[in-house]
Amino acid sequence: MIVINIKKIATIASCSLVSIAANATVLPSIQTNSQWFKDSAQIVQAKTQQNTAKKAKNVILFVGDGMGVSTLTAARIFEGQQQVNNQGGEENLLSFEQFPRTALVKTYNTNQQTPDSAGTMTAIVTGVKSKAGVLSVSDHTLRANCLSSQGNELITLVDLANAKGLSTGIVSTARITHATPAATYASSPERNWEADSNLPAEAVSNHCKDIAYQLVMRDQANALSVALGGGRRNFIPADVTDGENKQGRRDDGVDLTAAWTENFSRSAYVWDKAGFDAIDVSKTDHLLGLFNASHMEYEADRANDIAGEPSLTEMTQKSIALLDKNEEGYLLIVESGRIDHAHHAGNAYRAMMDTVELSNAVRAAVDATNPDDTLIMVTADHSHVFTIAGYPKRGNPILGLVHNVNGDLSIAQDGKPYTTVGYTNGPGAVIGSRDDLRSVDTKSKDFKQQALIPMSSETHAGEDITLHATGPGSELIQGVIEQNVIFHAINQAQALNGTKY
Image (cartoon, rainbow, N blue to C red; front, side):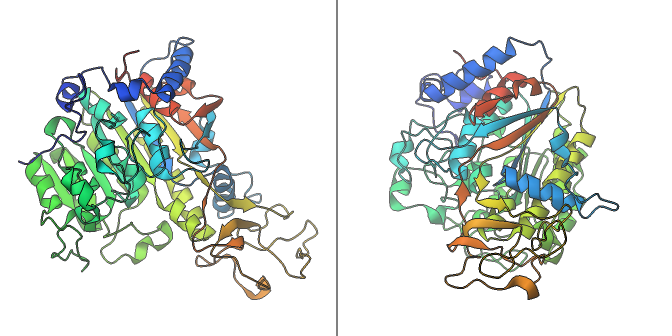
């Protein structure tokens, strides 16, 4: 069996993965000496002293990638308007919007006012804010420079949970090697080093490993129990064609899907819906599922996938069933990754569909767990420049043209109607005269919403996002917080004992 020390920190004082596997409580000084870490830890400690709530046996963290406040508002209306006897849709609530605790979260990276997913997820899972583009390494690291990252690797919630003897799982509708899920289990100075073919000569010579390799080649004590998502191409050799006739991207000739089943006992690898459905969780302790060569399909398009794909809800349910076998508890992190991609494409319909499916998955998690021992949190990594504007009447289709309270079509100064939702920038912008949308179905799943500034891809936004929580430890979620506080809330709630102050 081939394994690597996934964090490459054997030389950092008292903090190799060997010691972590022995339930050590010391994190590397590069992590605990960070002012980000100290400040956020003190905030959570102060709140912890104010209550005597019981600890959480299990934690499930949901991340809607790009799911800003305007996305939540539009999605709740979108879902509500599809319900029988709705009052307009505005009265609806997504499942997690009914959780008892809510906070606002500041999302900036250490080098960017408007963040990227690598830096934001690093903050969530390590307690330390870092640069855009880097995964679970401190901001002393130079992006895309392997040598500079060595000695700057950070320990994640997944590592701490494994050290405590908990089971761990990662689920995403994006490539499982994409920035948000990757930050939970990999350390890398470059989010795009998903396969070894992406590594530059400097990274190879300094022995950095690609993200897919880091996911699979973990030692037994720090292995994931569940990893479900897309990105199959990063796990198979370039001369191999997968079940959907797509080529792999590994130049090292290593089939990481085979390595998964070889490295871990009672393990399974699946790549289609039939294989996923056939998994007997009672006989499986390590499950790898890679359901697309790249990202999984949008929820709106999932039925069209050649080999079939499980939904986010189905992946969440199966993950909980498998992880729940561990009497010590588990940590599960679930990302709805394609909300972000739909927004980048200026496509509100698909963003809404994926947000509603995230809500469905959260509801399923609530139904499958005990509220007395499971902390469930729902947040985003960042927002998008997505807006809800005009003065549409109550119940106006959220993806439709704006109609005034009297029912008349609202007309802009250029004599043309406009949609309620749109973007500050993106591919829906036009240079010159604006299209007249009276003859266009703006509610179509392929419609690109209007945008002000023409760009090939719509951008992230910098405002706060929300954090919703229920279960033991949820009382720590309140006010306006830095994103790295989320790490400490989970650490305290689950008693991971991953800190020495």
